[in-house]
Length: 155
Image 1 (spheres, rainbow, N blue to C red):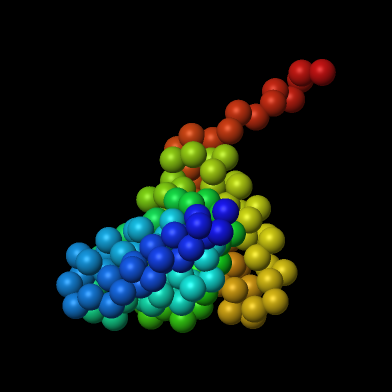
Image 2 (tube, rainbow, N blue to C red):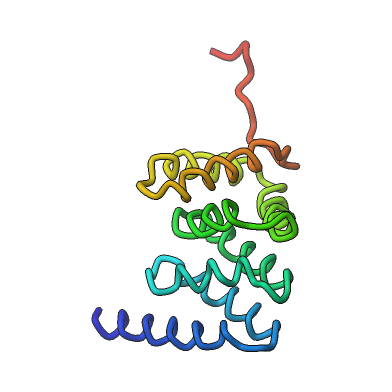
């Protein structure tokens, strides 16, 4: 178990180094790959920086999308924090990623809304404020495939 943990931290360290590349393609690749490790605390600040990439919003979009595709608290926390400090341009690309990830399956969108509810109790005010923004964006979506509703006249 220790070896696996050590390997994960080594991978995170290498991806953090790649995240500081001058080439936007390297930063985008680092964002996608580093999102896999969003549960590792050392990855959280570099992920936030990639979502808010100052040089290229392509990095913003692909990193936010990768974090949202995790469909867990670790990914939603980084996106929520980013939403609270993002300028209008970055926020637009984060919202585009939200749409891309959650517009198809209503049950996935609903599960994400539920996860945002849990983040509303986070000790970090920035996460709480961002969770409200993320929840608002999710509830504004009308997914293509909604979960079936039980018939009203069934016993």
